[in-house]
Image (cartoon, rainbow, N blue to C red; front, side):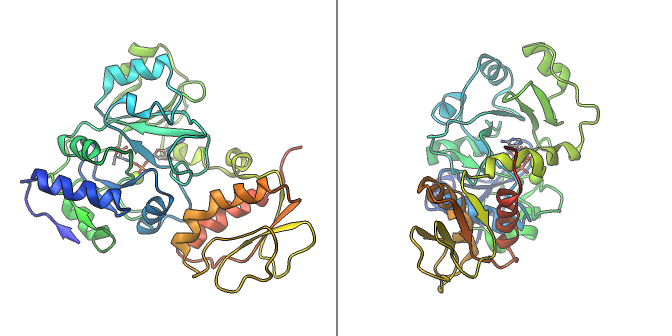
Length: 324
Ligand code: TXA
Ligand code: MG
């Protein structure tokens, strides 16, 4: 890991960071709020590495960072309110959730399979020039291990994630030190996470928004509650978990070097048994098998460790009973 000491960040360092991200590596960089754990938002594998590095037990959707609103037009449905908020607060600590364009280039793992996408243009010269150099959207959750506090200096990042990163760009302490305000415009406008930009500042721009009685950390979990997400993960086909055999009419989602049976159709999430590769292939694999028209997708056991926990969490949601 190259840890650039001091705050003399040069163009070469930003070039190097941009190349590393384009090559699927993880690069931590400063924003005005907290340090972000950056990766190519268009690469399932790079995004899977982010989840693995953070050690998240589930796939929490990630914020896609962009240099300006136009950069989101091929993957998000922009609205007048979105344009007004971006004009008023970007670059700055406001994350806007919008409906996602299904055929857009963003990794489905980055949005955790949701039909919405969170976008933000950070107000930091290093972050902005990295985004420009990279010329592609960058996912960046706070660069801490899951459950730890967000990092406001490069040293915090190194303590938590140093071994997992290709590079940390040290831009000194962050100015705000608190994550961005998150507002959804995909439903009735509502603040999902309070931050540096207040509700009243936002209301001056787009009018009154929905009040959440207790806008707290709990609200973050609201969107990943099983009830709300189940439908996004549920394919048309039925799901059978932890299979040791495949029945007639079933497709197989396999894992590891020894698929239980060579069913047709079959997709192996990772013939090597690599959980990062399996996570990267999960949503696309489910979708492809579902399109084959099979009645049921039979899924081999996935080890319940590391990213396997997040994979199993999503598979359980997909298998949960659904509404008619
Ligand atoms: O200030 C920040 O926003 C920092 C810097 C690095 O940009 N990033 C950050 O990312 O805090 P993260 O991953 O730690 O927090 C992202 C938040 C989570 O609460 C997540 O649930 C929410 O945004 N989020 C992301 N996509 C969403 C979506 N499609 N719908 C609802 N919430 C979403
Ligand atoms: Mg965070």
